[in-house]
Image (cartoon, rainbow, N blue to C red; front, side, top):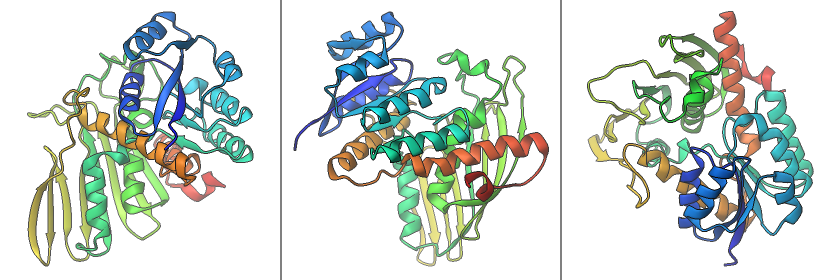
Amino acid sequence: MTELKGALIGCGFFAINQMHAWKDVKGAEVVAICDRDPQRLKIVGDQFGIERRYSDAAALFADGGFDFVDIATTVQSHRALVEMAAAHKIPAICQKPFAKTLSDAKAMVKACADAAIPLMVHENFRWQTPIQAVKSMLQSGVIGEPFWGRFSFRSGYDVFSGQPYLAEGERFIIEDLAIHTLDIARFILGDVTTLTARTKRVNPKIKGEDVATIMLDHQNGATSIVDVSYATKLGTEPFPETLIEIDGTLGTIRLSQGYRLEVNSAEGTTVSDASPKLLPWASRPWHNIQESVLAIQQHWTDRLASGGETSTSGADNLKTFALVEAAYDSAAHGRTVDIGVLLR
């Protein structure tokens, strides 16, 4: 198989995981990197042996010599960079949050569709081993038709120590974390028709919300709760685990702390270990997320080679992004939001 060549734009906090994963991906390699910060550019370039280094994305695209671009910058630059990729007809991966606004996200999807290039959002949480295990168990039919679910990420982990900018934004936990949890809810129980949300700021040192509770009505008739918190102090810190409860007509699925997967059905109760692998370059407790980075980047590579659509395409992610926007709208105005209206 011909090895695909990629370029990475953005050498910040999370991009290191992406670079490690590209080293392990079969069928692709990163041959060029770009960042406006010369120190970060040098650190990543030296660590991963990348000779082609750019401080300007326009110069990177002008030189070319790569088959796709991995955009790992902050959200403010996403639209401009995706549209630049579309103008050069270069398939693009875009880090989450996809865009500043839903209208920006729609424009980015359209630009890539008009250019006939693939666009994938780096929404890696649905690729975590335990999440995939829950999805597989549900698809097996062992608990029948799901009618209720809960997707919970509650933690007291100091996420601001590694990413201090998170404390400065007017929006925090829904945009940064619940975006993942909402996507998991969609992945497991299907698309959403209406949403109601409530938020709270517990930590006085931050500007945005650090607690959110969101109720979703799914198209298949199921109801679910997405609850996220960075203000919850527990005896055993679960970060960064997403805990899941699914009730079905024939049984239940429970993914609990420590990656314990319990299935109760007419056949009895089974308990299994849904733990992620600890990759050689990964570290606890981040290894769950780090393994999913490798999984989604391998998925992208395989789909790019075969011409198939990715699981978290730009078009698919519009449906998750709409939930984020709806959650803020609902919390601000105390109303239930129709998701279909947002996506028109």
